[in-house]
View 1 (cartoon, rainbow, N blue to C red):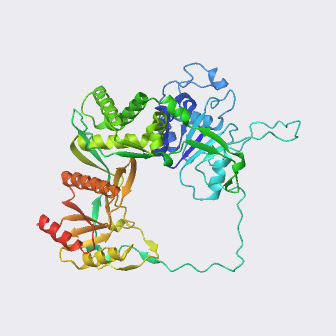
View 2: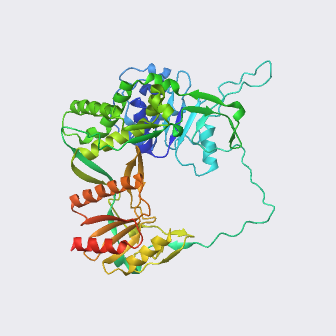
View 3: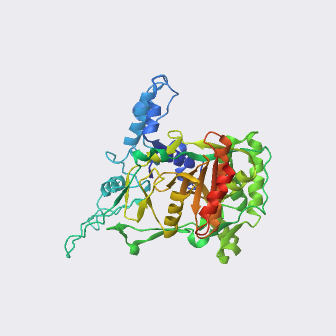
Length: 501
């Protein structure tokens, strides 16, 4: 199996998942048969020339060397990694036993292993050529023996996931003449002469919690987790693809029902507790075993509390089907439990900033183009404000003329984001406006015509973001608010201006 990741960090997380057996495919979880290869791994291997620990290999030539000869330098280790990549699946060579390859941009060309059965794409594919290169890693035949009855080669298959590959793409013809010219676009960019209206903000990648030594969880305060069986894949259907379309006449199915039989309730509890433990142990003040014992207890309480709501009722009433849905949504379950524990047991919160760019500003925004309606913004560092609704246009006009506002900007292509977790999935929240008041305080403002469960979750994380930044003390005083009805913005600005004064 080959996994093609987008970044070295993603590849490292995939390797961690296989090593910890979080991927429930036993054959792929043997670290001795997994090869993680990318630029960062090679850089680490080539970092120095001193000898490192002995490396065992199945290469016949290397196996004849003495133990002293096999004391390799880091550059030799890097060379061995490359030789393993080049010889995957070849008998009596370094890559003979490799069964699971995790790569970042290392396998686009010049690799001809003949034993590839699965390719998983976990990156953006920006061209058809790149798709062809990746899929081509699995198109090497293992055998060229001709079937005597048919006079043809026996068919061989590779299963490809996540790679939008089109077989023999062709250009269509437009009999109606050339396409119409594109609509004119408006450039949106910072204006150097308006630098006085520049706004900056801390680039927070997460909010860390310092936990109390004894954990507790009030189940009445924990929000229910809703798992919809109709949105959960319970059957993997594989079919060959011709011209970008699956041939449904040749579908082969892989049922996931066996996973539910393997995962009893107690095993689900321990799996979830272990995953939460992995995420919390870095900030845990006490003995690790004490943390794990408490997590097992809290996870078990949550699992039996009825706070996991499985729909439709057919799946909720059947224990086997319920466990299947819970098991296939384990990531959502773990994130939900972790966030509940995190919010209820935090003794102190601390913002963690992006290491490469801890502070961002409106001056960092690159020029972009839009066909949406927009209007000049007098007190904004950006030349124009792009409107998604007439309500936003009204609020932008109010911000541009309100006496309480010193500067403001529409949060569009700026990169100001607050991470939040909803129903177990990590998402990004982009509030509508950043406002600097005449008092010097900052206001994060959202306009919202409706108020859903997810909107309330977003505001909870925004409030936590504001509290963490204010606790840090190095970025001034911040506030947040939401206008649920048109015209409320004037009262919001007045209220926060009084609070700042």
